[in-house]
Image: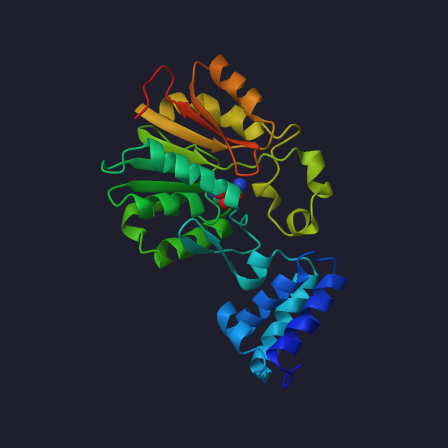
Length: 288
Ligand code: GLN
């Protein structure tokens, strides 16, 4: 309601979010009020007695309604912070997740950014992986592939915001079907949730995130079965590939790699302690 104080608006919003089953309702209410008014959290905390004007009240109302329908917060406010930047997010893109930052960290640690690296991101979505790496490697060139034209439009927006157009190409394709090789670094956060488990996830995910970005087939491993055999042609000599995967899937992926003659360079765990990333070398190649 306009006219009420920011603090009162936070209290009302928190109550409404709580009734919608949202756990962290107080923090989310603060975030939405800040977003509606266009202020930082510190301003809200210091000046909570200020009135909420009419336009902000309307914005807050619209966002609250969306969040109570369990749209992910990133879709409600239209962005999510990942690594060093904010990325535009829509219903056509997977929300960038903190565990995916592990791939950025591992790629930065393992590849030589002083070189003109050629980078490939399979299933780029918002482009968060590709663009974070290109931003960190000023000499690198990158290609992002996605099957969804709508997701690629979001990636393009993010690319332009970060000023990376000159070093980045975005192509609509089914995985790496049209591609030849010679990439120094391949990254991918493919869909890896077993199909039957998706409906049991939080409504933010099961009802509002793109199924194309989630569904990994019966056991979640279909994309890896398709992509790993292609690494022999995709990777330049000494190239590396980093794949995110679901908790508990690492051992099966290591086995799949070995069966294909692919070198497993590392298996990494996320901050929650789950196996989350496998780092592979070109078949019988050396790491960078
Ligand atoms: N590469 C994007 C990410 O890591 C999208 C991944 C996906 O859609 N499965 O967030």
